[in-house]
Each structure stands twice: as C-alpha cells, then as structure tokens.
Amino acid sequence: MAGAGRIWTAALIVIGDEILSGRTHDKNIAQVASWLQVQGIRLSEVRVVPDVIERIAEAVNALRTSYDYLFTTGGIGPTHDDISVDGVAHALGVPVVIDPRAREILEAYYVTKGGMNEARLRMARVPEGADLIENRMSGAPGIRIGNIHMMAGVPAIAAQMLDALTGTLEGGAPLLSETVGGWIQESQVADLLSEVEKAHEGCQIGSYPFFREGKTGANFVIRSTDRDALDSCVDTLCEGLGERGFDWTPGGI
Amino acid sequence: MAGAGRIWTAALIVIGDEILSGRTHDKNIAQVASWLQVQGIRLSEVRVVPDVIERIAEAVNALRTSYDYLFTTGGIGPTHDDISVDGVAHALGVPVVIDPRAREILEAYYVTKGGMNEARLRMARVPEGADLIENRMSGAPGIRIGNIHMMAGVPAIAAQMLDALTGTLEGGAPLLSETVGGWIQESQVADLLSEVEKAHEGCQIGSYPFFREGKTGANFVIRSTDRDALDSCVDTLCEGLGERGFDWTPGGI
Figure 1: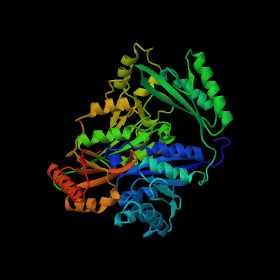
Figure 2: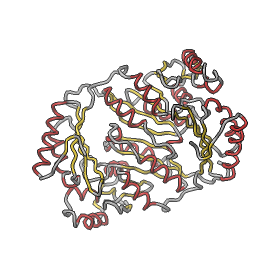
Figure 3: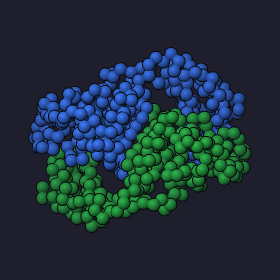
Figure 4: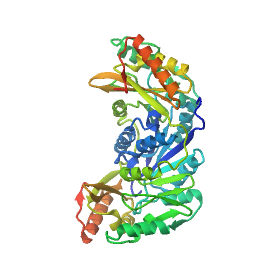
C-alpha cells in the first residue's frame, strides 16, 4: 500500500459452543475489529471454534505464527466448559499454573461476595509465563502470553480488556475510511467502482448493497491508510456518480 | 453421543472485508447456525476471511474435506469485490462459467429494471458443474457445488436461500436444548454443573454469565440429541440448584 509502511495484522479466535449453536449472537468480532482499526492493526482472519481443547490449540497454532497478534474471546470463566487456558497452554506446550497476581486480584474481588472457592480459583489459571490484562468490571483478568491476548466472552468485559490494552500494541498507520451512499443498485455502477479503484493506488472500494423502505440502495466504502489518496478517490467516485445522474450522500445512507 | 447415530457437521466461511473491518456486524453466523440445528447438522467451525481469492480458496479447501457440508456467505454480487465464485472455483480447480439458467433468471428479473448489463451478468458466473439455489427476493441465485453452498451476504437474502435449502440436506437427530436461568453467579455452582454433566452421558451443559440491571446472573443451557437424557439432566440440575437455595427460571432469564 502506497506510503503506508508496514502493515500489522491480527487474527481472532472466538471460542464457544454458544456461538456455533446460534444461541448467542457474537458481538466480539465487530468490537475487536473496530478497536484494532484504531490501533493501526488489520484484523485479517477470524475463526469460531467449539469448547474443545484440541480444536482451540489447533487454531491457536495456525494463527499465532501467521499474524502479528492473536486475540481470543470466551472460555476464561469459572465453569467446566471454560477451557481456553488449557487450549492455549496445549498449543504452546507449557503447563497451566495458578498465577499469584491473579489469585490476589480474585481474592480481593470476592472478599465481599462469599470469598474464594475452587471454581473462582479457576480464573487465576494461566499458561505458564503469562501476563495479566486488567478487568475493572468483574475481577477475573484477561491473559497475555507472547503475541496472544485472551479476553472474556461477555462483550462488556471484553471491551474493558481492550480498553486496558489500548496503546500497548505496536501498529501502523490506521486504515481510514469514507462512505458514500445512495439509492443506487450496485449493478448500475459496478464498472465505475472498479475503474475508480484501479485509478487510485492504495485505495479499496467496497460495495455494500441493502434493501430498505422497499428500495434498493448501496453504500460504497473507500479505504486507505493515506488521507490524500482517500480524499481524491472519494472525489473521483462522487464525480462519476454525479455524471451518471445519481444522487449520493456523504457518510452513507 | 448415546443413541444419536451419525453426527452431521458443517462449516461456514463468512467472506468479506466489511466484517473484518468492523463496519458490518455479522448476522449470518447465528442465522446459519440456528438453521443447521433444525436440519440436524452441527455447525463445527466458522472462518471469516477477506475478499482475496487465494484466502477464500485456502479456507474452502481446508473446510470442505473436514466437514459434511460447507456454507459460504458474501461476495456473490455484481461488483469487482465480489469474488467468492472465483475463490471456490480456484479451490476446486474448475473454470468459472456463465450458467445459462442463472442468466435466464437474471434477464427475467431485470427486464423491468433497466435490463442486463455486464455487472449483472457477473451474478450468473458459477464454478463449472454447479447447481443453483433459488433466491425469491432479488433474482441472483445462490450456488451449490458438491458439498459447498454459496449464499448472499445480505442476511435477508441468505435467509431466503436457507429457506430454499430446507429439507434438502441429509442430517441426523437435531440437537435439542433447554435453558435454566437464575440470578446466580456461575462460580457459586460450577462444581454442580460439572457433576451433573458427568452424570448424564450425551448431555452438555454450557454456562453463560451476564450482567443486567446491576446484577450478576447466568443461563445454563443443556444440550442433547436425546430428549429423555435431556429432560433427566435438566431435572437433576434444577434439583441441585434448589438444594443450594437458588431460585431458577425455566427457559432462562
């Protein structure tokens, strides 16, 4: 990409039978993706895997070496189906240990909530050699080991953990984007989109059709790490849409 | 799983930069997962990949041989970034051809909408040897080739295509589930959940904590393909919760 320098990449593993059964609608993919954009890191692949240690380990090993960063969500709670720590430890070939800092955090958190028990102590388990990610919301910390960042599955808690990580990961120039929308069938302007994209190096144009109020429309999202290239690409696209007699709305509709 | 017979499995590839950028919140994972449950097919893995032919092909080849069925969503529209057909054809080592049935459908659909053009004709492209999946909503069909089912990314259109596929795929006994919820911290009953699951072969218990109205609660989801085993497991769990003094709500809270 022109003038963008190194591109930093990340993958995300969403761990949990509840996503694969359709019971729970995942909210972490979009949340992690948006957060990564701001850090200048590109989310390049997501896998959703079941609560099975070997399947988690397999995904971890496939992705941790292919991308700069790996994130996981889910499976770090106190119950028997929370086995993400075991999956990551298995992938890395390290034992699972009780982290004394995590134990201390949990003991303090539960002091007014019935105290520690065996299940709560499970949330102090980490792959040996790990650091912790702060969780201001519910005590139990996230886990950072190598380039792997393990976060809670509950989106509000995952958000807190992302917040704690903000600014701690090296990234590149953030991917900027502008949206232009209109009551346009994308098949009426497909050639234009392709021509404009080709004419602007380092810019990608995505076309996202929708049906709303009984009408067909589309939003065109232009992305680049270079502000000038992006603006120029948006201008050319809008000019082209205007020449063809289409109304367009900055920011999308 | 006791008495369940063969387990049929599926994987899903969600194709699209818009999901990986966080711009669009995926709705197809939950939709496909829920539909598969009813068909007696278990969604076992999901991958989200960018609009890059090689990346799509790589995921297709990794998943189509590992599971009974493979589904894809996204990237079958008229614009330059719609390259899922190319990705699947690349994976299968077959050429991309214009399907005459698809062309006919599109010509009929666009007859009152400005007629065919080059972009619209793109939606008649299929990997050679494919069948079509009906799309009552917007003309352009889905594509079925071998065990691969390619659907639109727009959730309402994907839903129509799933509807057209209903009853056409061989599956096993559907996975049944019951939910019990309570204002219970899961760490207070983790040992109970684990014991009850172990005592009921063929049942899995998932624990899904939440924070709501300033309080901590959890829903416990019991899953089995065997109705009797499921009911017995639910009864034992509820009895155990009652013995510990917890109120629980059938169906979850």
